[in-house]
Length: 186
Ligand SMILES: C[S@@+](CC[C@H](N)C(=O)[O-])C[C@H]1O[C@@H](n2cnc3c(N)ncnc32)[C@H](O)[C@@H]1O
Image 1 (cartoon, rainbow, N blue to C red):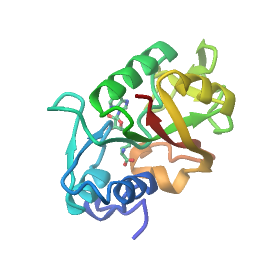
Image 2 (cartoon, rainbow, N blue to C red):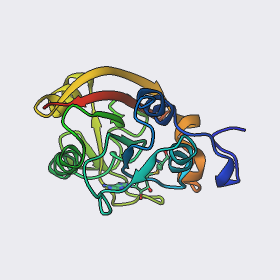
Image 3 (cartoon, protein in one colour):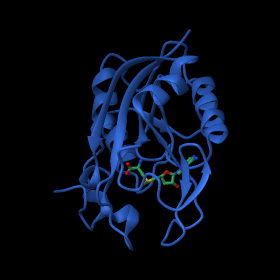
Image 4 (cartoon, helix red, strand yellow):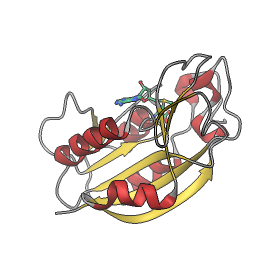
């Protein structure tokens, strides 16, 4: 089964969801904050592994980890900072974050209307007018520095991993995202 499987129920979980499940092996039943669940492939994997996925809106007490695959891509820097702040407040001090971020090496970087440095909104297509934020390594490290200790950071080609179902009218070509694992500073 590939990430592009037509049946949403059969799409494999994101590699960072699997990393989160591994990292929480000693916390059976723990709450995991999930931001941007989309088709629910990660939600299903978390539940199958015995965890309790929760959203920011439904968070009921701090979660043991946060997971966000291919969702922290939209908006301005201020909006992303606000969202990361909300994520940090919704998890335990020292808890891990497993998240992807757009890279300046993504084929879409620089396309469309320049909204602010590093932020562009496509003029056409299914995401016309939606701001997309991109980072180089130093920029991403700077974004995370105050609230998060970065444990690993890797840039990866994600056309297959992000999945073409998310961009049906314009399948991803040349998408590159950062895979970050970080720990909330206490
Ligand atoms: C490309 S899908 C990825 C879904 C899933 N995480 C996966 O990897 O299959 C992006 C998801 O993030 C959501 N999303 C985008 N920006 C968001 C934000 N600022 N806050 C919460 N969800 C967001 C979208 O509604 C969509 O469900």
